[in-house]
Length: 375
Ligand code: F6R
Ligand code: MG
Ligand code: MG
Image 1 (cartoon, rainbow, N blue to C red):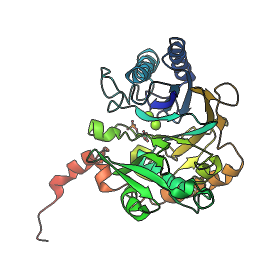
Image 2 (tube, protein in one colour; image 1 turned 30 degrees about the vertical axis):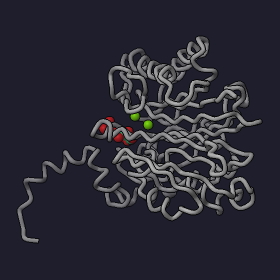
Image 3 (cartoon, protein in one colour; image 1 turned 90 degrees about the vertical axis):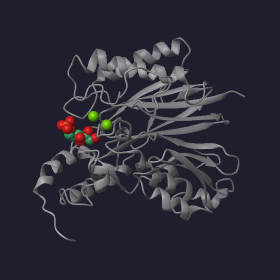
């Protein structure tokens, strides 16, 4: 049986009006290169999206995860967009996420964010790709826990005998570069003790416990850890498979119904609510204090290695439902409230994380002003 892989690779390689959104020509250029890749058989199908200032490539193929040909195609897209569009037009932060010069077999560790999932196609295989802007990978910890381990979110954990057996979470320790697997519901408390620390432990994969079926895959890139300084937010992506013994699409989306706080937003230095937005209604223009952080959800079926959308590869815009207007309203209220705190913690992110921003330069100037005292 052939296995299908969905690869999502994204980068911020420049935008208009500051860090707001890419040009339409950038998205069109990406489509042109991926179409060439489709004609030469590198990918079977593809879709290009944008969220905030990020451009994302959703590609399907049979080559497995971390395939050099797929990664090289994505690298070529971002490199050429930078050289041919972002730099000549002096777009803001042109080529920002391309941290290395030459491609070396994988885009991992080179700046772009990657999430990939390989599976044997079921009789019918719905998937959702989430893409966020102005936040970092730990943002997915809370919704992933709710989707796969919280019966107050996912009724199937109680009602469906397959989900009832639980899930296995792969947790990545970004500081130490190591992973551990924990099984829910048995190890829920242990899992929570790790993933509550969202800037260090991030969920990278989720598997169904019954048969190890891959259920979710998230990007884990921390640009600041690669570059050693602040170079923009990582703006993570997440792929989740749904239905027939996996959480239903509606259960997956429910995890976003209360806008939880995520790190990022202005200068990557503030906590703000994650706002679910519609890409069809063009709600992904980040305008209040460079935000608030936001997420889009694209829904497809996968058939014979290809994306099937509502019109060709055009995905369902899952946050278009008017239900989400209430959630957006709530997110706006939370955003305004958080801003009343200005630069005071906990509205501003913790000291440790601020080390990757421009704040240390300000503090350096003040260091000579301190005089020693006995504690
Ligand atoms: C957040 C982000 C922006 C910038 C901010 C300052 O991820 O990219 O909020 O940090 O607009 O940008 P510079 O320093 O480039 O003027
Ligand atoms: Mg940017
Ligand atoms: Mg961005």
